[in-house]
Image (tube, rainbow, N blue to C red; front, side, top):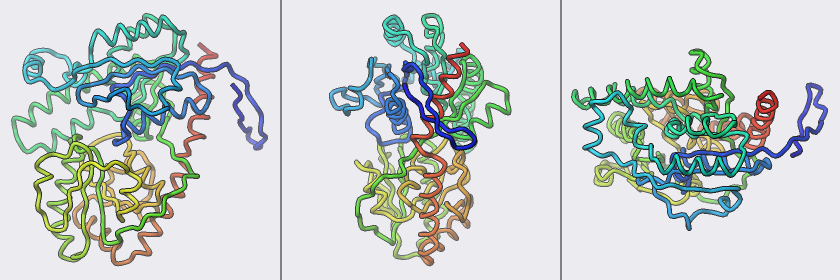
Length: 418
C-alpha cells in the first residue's frame, strides 16, 4: 500500500505499508442508507476500501432492520469476507420483565446470540486481521471472543454515548412509572457502557464531544473518526420550495419524535401566525401512526422518502429540534454538504463545531427558533449566506478522503508497536 503524506514543510513523500486487514462488526446491515447510523457505517466500509484496505464484515441482520441480502449494492462484492447472522432483537415484554430481576442491560442483551459468536470464531480462523472494529457498544458483547481468538487490535467506533441518550429521555418523560423504568435502563446501560469501553485497545469517537468525554474521564485512548463529505459532489438542478422548512430523520428513534413534537407544539403554533405561507414538512422512516394522523395547520407529514438529497434540495430550511441525544447528526453534515441553511438546538449540533450565525443557526428555546425562522424567511439573503458558509465549513473540516488517510496512518503506527 502506498500512502502519500506531507511533512511540516509541505514536502510530499510516500510511505509503503502492507495491506491492512480490517474486520468490522455491525449491529445491523448498514443498508439502505436512510438514517445516520447506516450512512456512517456504510461510509466506513467505503472509506477503508477506497484507501486500499482489505475489509471484511460480520453484520447482525436484525428483526428490527431486516435487509434482504440480494438487495445489497455493489460495495458488498468488494468485501474480502461477508457474513450475516439473523438476530431477533425485538423488544419482548416477557424477557423485558424478567430482566428487571437481573443486573444486566436489556438494551445490550437483545443483541447477543450464540450464532454470532460462532460466525465470528469462523472468520477469525480464516484470516489474521490487523484491526477488529466494533460499531457501537451493541456489538461489544463479542469483544471477549475476538480477544480469545485473535491478536488483532480491537477498537469500538462510538456513534453515541448511549446512556446519555437514555438519560435525556428519562428526564423528559412525563409518566412517573415510565420515567422510573427508563432511569433503571439508563443506570444499567451506563454501568455496562463505562466498563466495556475500557476493555478495548482504543476508541473511535465519531464526534469531538465523545472524544472530550472519554479523555476527561480517562476512559481509553481515542482517535477521532468523524463522518466525511466529498467536496466535489455535483448537485442535481432541483427547484426549491422557498416557503418551506423540513425535518428528516428516523422516526423510530425516540429523541427525534420528542424533538418534532416539541417543535410543532411549542414553536410552530406560534410561527404560523407570523409566517402564514410557510409549510413544515416532516419526513423519516417508521413514522408513528400518531404523526400520520396529525392535522396541524401548515404541517405536512411525508413519511419515508427514498432520496435524502432530492428531498432536501426540494425544501428550504432544515429544522433539527433535538431535546436529548448524543453523538453527531449525520443528517446535519449531509445537509451542510448540500449548502442547506439549518436551525438546530445546541444538542442537535453537538460534536460538529459549527458556529451560530456563521454557518448554522442555533436555537434552544421556542422564542429563539421563532426569531431564526423569521430571519430565514424575511431575510432570505441571510439564510443563503449561512448555507453557503455551511458547505465551505464541512468541506474544510470533514473531508472524507483526508479523514481515512489520516486514520490509516494511525493504524499502521499502532500495529508497528504491537
